[in-house]
Image 1 (tube, helix red, strand yellow):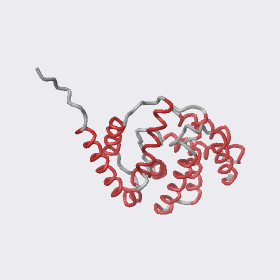
Image 2 (image 1 turned 60 degrees about the vertical axis):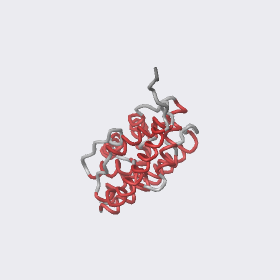
Image 3 (image 1 turned 30 degrees about the horizontal axis):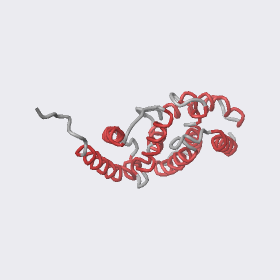
Length: 206
């Protein structure tokens, strides 16, 4: 397989063709997930051959945003299936990459260690200092494309629910990110409570 060729191709394609309105699902997100996958691969001790396929899955996992927003994971698989043979990837390798791409679809349901790593890498930011930056990038993106219109209060509602229900799969991600994710959740809850206290009362006086 020509890993470097496959990587350079998709990075350049995303750089040139992604809609600039994608403030969250941008090239930066793809490279961020790729970096997280590399970090978790090392911590989990995954063999090199499997690790390469996981890296490719990370690089191609949101490429379907070039085609459509909703169900972009399926479009990502279509693009990987179309382009990766040009870089000497075998059918069975593309099949594994495709399954790893699809497992990043929410709600995440990972079983193998490779699937768990991809899922944890995709949501690595939940347990980082830059969580709020990426969170509001996603809100802006949803509002811009009409995926789901939200104001600050309703967005905080969504984030409280999402972080409360989310758990990292791998021991490595738990070790790296769970503590900060809990801190981020507590901060969101605090903001959410402040916003709800400021909501006007719906009761009327007689």
